[in-house]
Picture 1 (tube, rainbow, N blue to C red):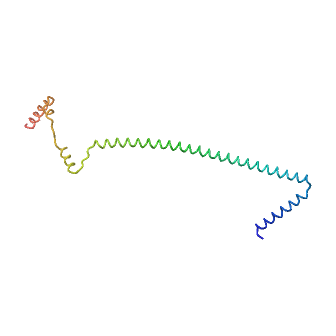
Picture 2 (cartoon, one colour; picture 1 turned 45 degrees about the horizontal axis):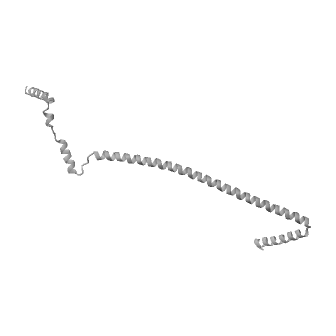
Picture 3 (cartoon, rainbow, N blue to C red; picture 1 turned 120 degrees about the vertical axis):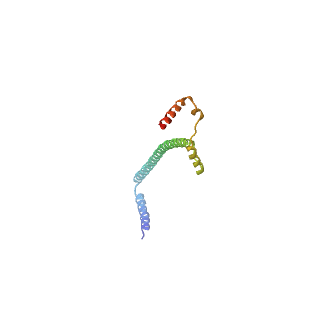
Length: 152
């Protein structure tokens, strides 16, 4: 016989034996057993309801804890996001300043322009106002003294 068949047969035979024993008792004993079984069933129902409430409370507490942690993570994420945004704005301002600085420096576009720029820097230019100003009157005296020294 298999385990399932033996279990089923044992349950049937045990139930029949219990029912026969119950019917063989007098009414007072039957009433006592009935009340004992009903009290046990009532206690089992109460415990099942209590455990269901405990489980619901535990689930609600876990849900509240998870929500609190999510709020904490959300707040910290918002803080980090604000810091990153501020750093990006600072970087954008710095890049703008760098671009402004780089725009002030003329950059030759071709080699010919580069060579022209070099040639321009070799030229000596004099401003007529500077050359003939009254501040330069003593320059002629110094130049004449230098010429006389070379003649001697």
